[in-house]
Figure (tube, rainbow, N blue to C red):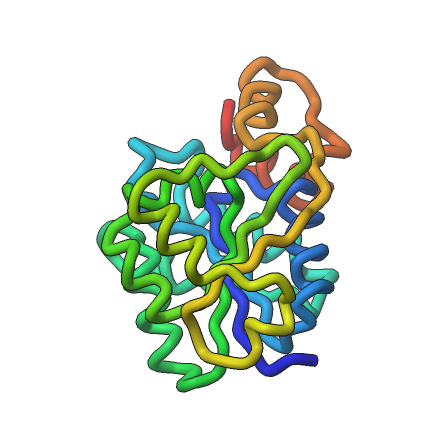
Length: 211
């Protein structure tokens, strides 16, 4: 195992097998000893979420319960105010010292990086892993394209050589599952079983979420 902390963020509204499969594949490729899924508490780029943050946190904990190598970081849910990733990474960096910190982003999120709060500081705090699906394409412009291009490395092992500042692309399997579709099915009274863990679906039904 590599001594590194990996952060896999998202709204997880709700968490589904697409999230879990991508996390599993990245975890295997990075072989880090500390892999955390981090639900956004109050995502600044969304007007609202379908479920409150504490529900999304509880569902993620249920989904990961069988997998001890994947853990939940709840700091954004516990922290008040907008969930800015730069502040989250700064708090993680204070805890872990100089060890490598790696932030995982989907290609769509990476394409919007210029709109992130203090995005340039992200690479002072962590490496970036951009998860590429078969149909995803980089659509960077201006300074983002220049910065990510300059810092790109070819092998995941190169991320373990320093604490932050590098960018690596990793391919992941694309499952045709989306939280938006699951919420729509639930709102229409349909059954989204086999798209997400049964424990998560039971929680949704118990608490009447997304109806």
